[in-house]
Image (tube, rainbow, N blue to C red; front, side):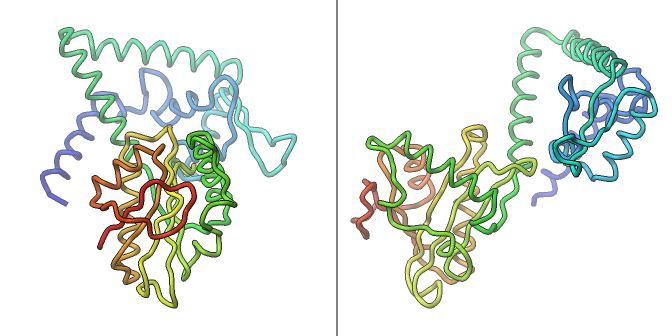
Length: 297
């Protein structure tokens, strides 16, 4: 990693934390730290499970508990056990908590206006566009990709979304039973592997490798089940998944990656072509395929 890039990110972080008041224990002039104020906002009018709050904010369990206890002592939050499942704790705002959240919202709006007000109209537009781009890129950097059991709940959720989308987009629908197989045991080491991409511990994408022969390098491997949630498309996640699958294939000794795809998946076709995959003659009898690609690693 280039040192200049690292320094640029650190400089940006210092400027932002200073400007938004993150260094002050009395965020927005109230008796809360930034963490406590954010938790009030995230709990919201409807309340939220404590587990969900931890996942959403990527915070340590003990730290969230400390923040909640501090808010409880001030009479702003109630933490109760769920009536449906005693293992689940739910946080709700009291009437005082709802009023405090509304006041924090009012002050946050005023603070945002104080940032924009000294700027010209053109500068305001540039700042808003730059912030939107930074938010988008920070979200992209938050996504984590890991090898996962294809039978796990996260993997199965991704596969259900994949099946649903293909069934909607293909001209005649898509029936997995009529397609070349990609069963869980075929996407589990050593036969293959399955990757799940997660954002704030929620699955948002997947991709798989299916090896052949007694060892991965005995024959070309297949790329299977590439899917990215619509909510995170445009973040470059498809390219990241593809790069990770290629890396794992190289490490397994594979020299050729192959895939087939349907003409309806124009975004995927464009990604494969940009990534160095060459269209070749059909190498299998996949009934839903119109294009066959391969790449030498």
